[in-house]
Length: 146
Image (cartoon, rainbow, N blue to C red; front, top):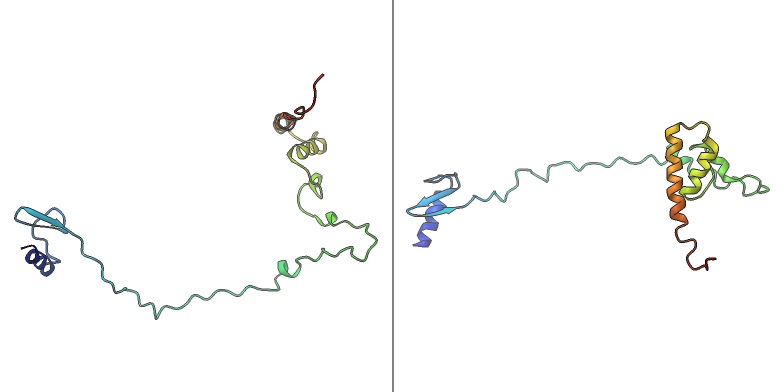
């Protein structure tokens, strides 16, 4: 009986006999819902599609051609020329300088303090206060206190 019902469903795969959706079919009291599988054949003919061509990079554009031009600036010199002189971008008070956030904020405050607005000055003050506490939190650990 079950084999006979399966054969009936195969023969009427696109017709909906009774049911709520077009995929539901009902025979007597038993209802069976199934969706038709998509075709295994692709609608796109992959053999005829063109292969996208990658653009060849320009090996001699300005960025690549001038890369590393200042690396050997003072190789044969007397050592008086430093590479931090090559830095042309960024704020003047940060060029060729290294340090942590607290040192950077102190340096900014010292260099631009008069030119900063009240809001920026207050923000730097608050951040320095927090960083000072954070950096000195464990300063006394391991030492004897008087």
